[in-house]
Length: 500
Ligand code: ATP
Ligand code: MG
Image (tube, rainbow, N blue to C red):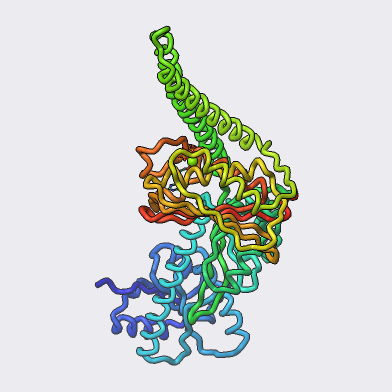
């Protein structure tokens, strides 16, 4: 173990000798003695001791205090004063040099040892702290994230160059200012000022993150989208001592996000377009080939064509034409709805009468033989609605109920007119195949068909159009369904019709 190397500065030779021998007995190495300030500095420069024991009163131009202050400042060597006087003036002067200890003469070896060990430890700790502070400062000055620190009142105590660049404020002007002045935030969507995260941290005493779409307003009034976090600086026990905000410019990221979003949307639209074209052309090809085959058969059989055969072929042609017409209508409807030209013309209607007639006509057209039971317990059933759109909604939902109830289970249409709530509720209920849970949330997407409909024909456009018709009335549509049990669709419309 190496012993501490000490320089003794003492102008009284006998005292110097005594101290030197005391130190040697204690196991320290005295690398020299000096009797004046100048000699002390020269020896310190030459031998680089780890500690200087310095008499305050020295003969010559420089007394102990001047010498100590030089050694401390330029050589970074800890100094312990030896003094015979405890007078205030001397102590005040000595304090300025921030000594590492005092020993008042006369002292024992024990006093000397304690003063030296504490002095060396203090110096080492001070150097560690200084090194850490320098490291931290270099780190904070060189990182690209902006950092601002405040005290427990929200007044700025630190700001790194990145924070200066982003806020437009320079460090000298910002330090001591309220953080809200330098770090002012706005919500890009609502344009409202946002509570300063420092205030929030001081109140809640925990880390706070910024919401999305937050912008910093710079000194020049420019807006910069930023991401940030603010953390409390805690001092034990549980006392908040200040706040650190770390923030960064996300303009580039935001631009990329917007671009990606636009690209995604375009891709989606393109995909839907091609899906639309391929589905519609496929749906047209079937009835067209039915017509073509029927016409060819008629031509082929010429005069041999019997009346009953002719009827069969004509019926096939008619059905095919009808299905093409239906599809055409759906497509036109979709086009209008997409272009937001689905006009709602509400007229006064007796909903009970309307539904009764609709069900009668519907059951007379369908060939499947399903029974449709209409019920309505409400007394007053007058309302304003668009007859054509309402017809479209109910016929579509009833057709689905029929189509997806392959065993001819009965179908119910129930009407409730709630005068108090000012709404009409239509419920279309079936006991058919139901909708698998996994498909339920995508049901109102164009061309989406549930996984249990493979053997049942359909385009997946009906519900989309129904929803548009409901929305044109400012109404809502929902459903509940259980696979294998059945489905209930519920439409709610305002009695007075849409205001648009
Ligand atoms: P189309 O465009 O010819 O009406 P589609 O009936 O397949 O074809 P939608 O009416 O939009 O299309 O219905 C979408 C999907 O919702 C259907 O494919 C089916 O999977 C499911 N669905 C709708 N109504 C019912 C119902 N009552 N019972 C079971 N499934 C249903
Ligand atoms: Mg349908």
